[in-house]
Amino acid sequence: MTLRSLLLAFLAFVIYPTWLAAGFLDYLHHRKTGIEHTTGPRESWLHVAEFATLAIALAAGTFLAVTPLVLAILVFSVVAHTALAIADVSYTLGRRHISALEQHVHGFMTVLPAVAVGIVAILHWDEIASSEWVLRPKDVPQRARDAGLLLGSYLLAGVPIAEELVRTSSRFRDPRLRTARA
Image (tube, rainbow, N blue to C red; front, side, top):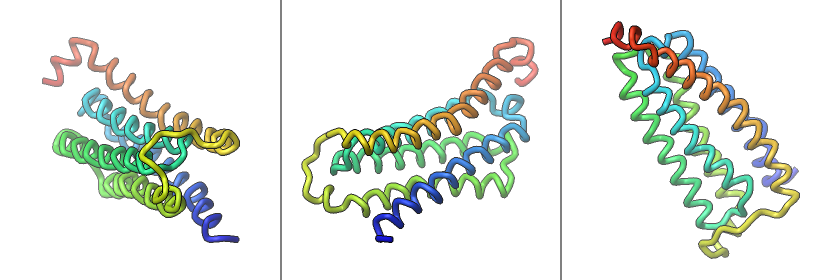
């Protein structure tokens, strides 16, 4: 087995599922601590924004060849995700309990995308170093293989985030509950 195939396997079978599992654990913490009764839709919208930044990175990595411009998009997405995660926790502190376990889960959710981008950069360093700052599609077989991972992340991470947003927003739509919270 080559170093390249080991890195790809590590990315696909360790980093990716660990990131998805951390996201699901985070979702369970939000349910357990009653996000719909504490921080409500504002925290949920931050989660949507965090997911969107990584969804952009995942889509770029799925459909585009790794060029310097695509690497810049990936890095920017991870930096934006991290900034939003800091804003999320800053908003939530004092409004909803964040346990030690949930804090550790957040660590995984912040670090794993950065590690993934680092691995992508290592895997494609020759192409990055010799390519122009352009967007160019991947070969069709690569896109087809990677599309399953993309769809999986959108379903496994996106559906709980959407459910949380609906749940928190519907609770705060009722004016009686909104005034009871004040």
